[in-house]
Length: 175
Image 1 (cartoon, helix red, strand yellow):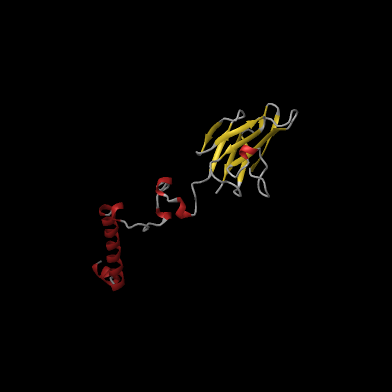
Image 2 (cartoon, helix red, strand yellow; image 1 turned 60 degrees about the vertical axis):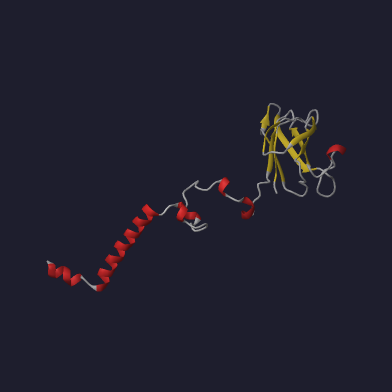
C-alpha cells in the first residue's frame, strides 16, 4: 500500500496540499486576529458587506452625488402639515388652494404632488402643483407668496360642484 501512495506522490500533489493547508491556516488566523480597526478605509468591497451594515449615518450623501435636500410634506385637508422632512410651513390656504413655504428657493426644481387618498366620499381626488414666482416656470400666486420659496397646490374632486375642494396631499421637491 505504501508503494501505491508513493507512486502518486508527485511534486505538484505535495505542493498543492501544502498550499491548501497554508490557505486554511491564513484564513483561520485572519478570522481570529484581524478586526475592523485593522482594516484601511475603503478596503472592503460593497458586495462583501453584510446587509444593512452601512446606513445613512455612515454615508456622506454629498460625496455620492446625493443631497439630503429632498423636501416633502404630508398636508391634511385643513391645511395642517401632518408630517414633513423639515423647514416647511403653510403660508395660507383657502378651499383647495394651498401655498407652502419651503424656506429656500425651489424654482426650477422637480415638484411631485399626489393625493393622500385616491378616493374620498365624493369621488376621485385630483391635485396639481407648481412653484410660485410667475414667469415661464412658475405659477402667478398672490402677492405675499409669489416668490421662488413657495409651492402652489390645487386639489379638486371629481364632482367639482363648488370648485376647488380641500383634500389631503403629499408634496415632494427634489434637488
